[in-house]
Length: 294
Image (spheres, rainbow, N blue to C red):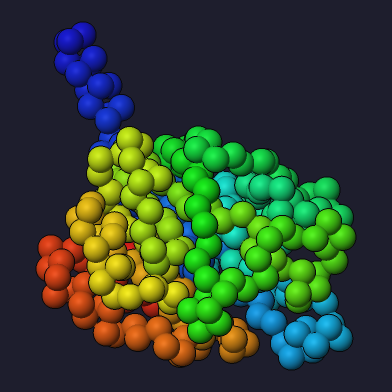
């Protein structure tokens, strides 16, 4: 009887892990939320979009708190544990501090994103510093934070607002400098996820950290060529799931509807090539707010 009871307790102890299901939702541009039922990680929240007045310097480019709060409510996102940004261009970093305040999340920052967060002058925004090859544990998630270079914008032939965020940052459109660029290895007992907003793969920077990537979440907008993209993480790690990011028209004001494709991204073309060259990989064409089980 005692042995049966011990066996029963042991079996029940395995249930939470056995039934842990990781889900990911795309939240426009380069933003995703990754959840396992216990913890939630949000990357690059940016519902707020710049206007012509912002670009002309006639209005500050600051998070639209009403819009952010409305979308969080609509998506039933009430609690987030950690927020990460890939760099400080407005289409990646704009709403992170406000989301941190509204959800109680820790905003994980570097020296540049800390300047943006501090500009809100709101003590309710919690921040913690990250470091190159640092490890952060959030519930069952283990996140390795890694630096990389931001590529030049192909349409411009150069980088957009390179260098550090200015020390006197005050929400000016032209103050959202690139800062430092990060990508993330997110390990979990169920899946290993690599999240990199850049289309140029850098397997050399994750060598020795993992031999397996189950899910690849990667930006496709600024790829140097389809061949370079296809010969990168996809070919090296053969992930079972691929989710593209940074393909929608983030120059259009967000209204909760399909904003259309970003000019020149050739979305259907690259996804078609991935499906043809890697038929074993499930390619997700993400719909805003829809949850996908990994």
